[in-house]
Length: 144
Image (cartoon, rainbow, N blue to C red; front, side, top):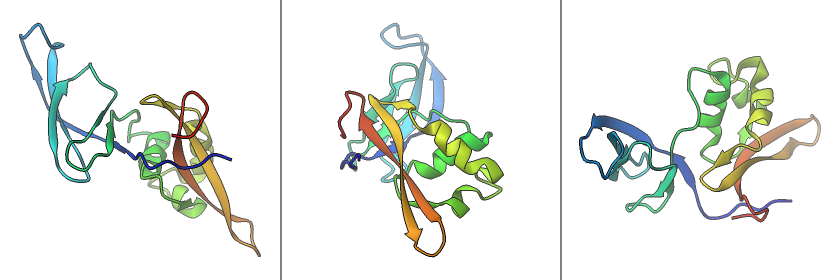
C-alpha cells in the first residue's frame, strides 16, 4: 500500500506568454500563477515542469492534460488529491460514462519526478460503492 505525502502538486495557471529576444531564456517567458495563493512567478516557457510556490509552498506543475478531453477533465478533478466518488468522476461534464476508465489511464503518468497512482476505498458496505484519489509516488518506488 502506498502512503500519501505532505507535498501537494497543483496545476499552475499560465498567462502572459511573451516573446523575448534575451538569449539566456527560451523564445518565450510566461507568467505562472498559483491558484491557491495567487503568488506570481515569471519563468521560461519551455524550461520547467514544476516549481515550488514561494507563497504557499505547494508545487506548481505544468498542466499535462487538456480540458477538451474526458481524460483531461478527470485529471483536473483528481489533481486536488482528495477522495472523489465514482458518481462524481462519471458526471457528463467530467469523464462521462467512461470516467473510471479515464482514471485508470492516468495511473502511471509521470509528473515532476513522481509517478501518479490511484487509491481506491470502499465507502458503503451494502453496495459496492467506492471513492478514488490520485497520489504522487516518488519515481524511485517509495512514497514522497
